[in-house]
Image 1 (tube, protein in one colour):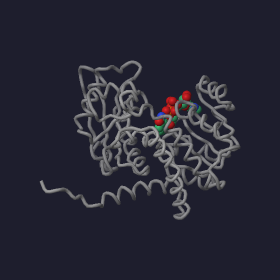
Image 2: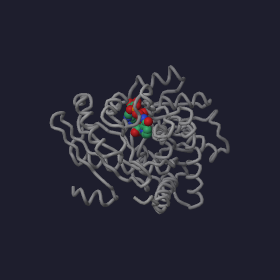
Image 3: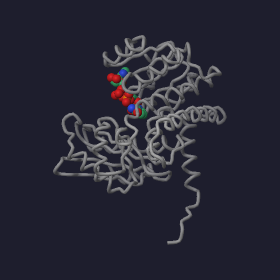
Image 4: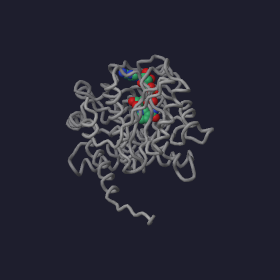
Amino acid sequence: MDVFDRIGADDYEQVVYCHDRGSGLRAIIAVHSTRLGPALGGTRFYPYATEDEGLEDVLRLARGMTYKAAAAGLDLGGGKAVIFGDPARDKSEAMLRAYARYVDALGGRYLTAEDVGTTQDDMDLVRRETRFVTGFSRELGGSGDPSAATAYGVLWAMKAVAVHLWGHTSLAGRHVAVAGVGKVGRALVGHLVDEGARVSVADVTSAAVEAAVVDAGAEAVAVEKIHALDCDIYAPCALGGALNDVTIPELRCAAVVGSANNQLAHGRASAELLADAGVVYAPDFVANAGGLINIAEELAPGGYHPDQAQAAVRRIFDTVTSVLQAADVGAVTTAEAADRLAEDRIAALSAVHQIRPPT
Ligand code: NAD
């Protein structure tokens, strides 16, 4: 891959390769945009088969963070990092601290957080080398695991869709199908049950299904059938690509609102297929921004306050509402409306004059 061509195509600001022989660290940090603020995004620790695969992943994810932060109205840009390796086998304190020094060397242009393969404990270690880290433990003044906030945000995205479809925020009596009951999906099931919704769940891990059935009274459905359930809302909360050429024609829901990243297997083509099928789609990066919004509260002048963070997450309701209205008015898909919302905000704020005092 010609890296300059690749990063030039989507206008990445900076891509940093990190190597530390002693600890075995091999990592890439991608800063897509700092136009709205420091580029925030998690550190993914993953056994990529090739260097190109890791590079492609970090680039795609960093750009996604730019859109997510911009659409959420945050003063943050988009970035992401990947560490090559199997977290269960290769992760060590030395490697994480070596990595943290590279984050520190970027001087705050990139702020890291946990992601697939990294944990809150890892962020606590990273924090010993750099202050440019978020999502560390509450005992240290951080906001902790973002999953609960993500689930709470998805709930409010669903409420916005409920107003659009049924005229009120209540989800009582609605049937919601949750695919993937891990950290986010399980917390979402709890909220839905509290709301009086009927909840069906599916997961490849039987223990996860059992917990949702026994603890929350959800109904279990086979993994390959959950998307095709006759229900009000389908909530993909597992892996990306849940909405594709096979699954979209089989949907029997009124709306799709979930936490999974990159739900549309073929981007705008999948969004159009959904719109043609009459399914209301809450764009993933708008609906699942609760974790990011929560983490951003760590950067607030007074530090992290859970109540303020919850209030900030609830604003996802307004963002989803704006996106649904803009899609109607502009006769575009909701995915396109969400992209425009992010792009317009970046363009508008980038055009504001930089006024600096004389040096
Ligand atoms: P998780 O790993 O805790 O849970 C994912 C669950 O999905 C697991 O229980 C897993 O067994 C299940 N699963 C995997 N493949 C499946 C399949 N084919 N069908 C059904 N279930 C399947 O992850 P999480 O933190 O709950 O995140 C869920 C999704 O939300 C991911 O796509 C993640 O990228 C996205 N997301 C998470 C956050 C967050 O704060 N954790 C924030 C934004 C987006």
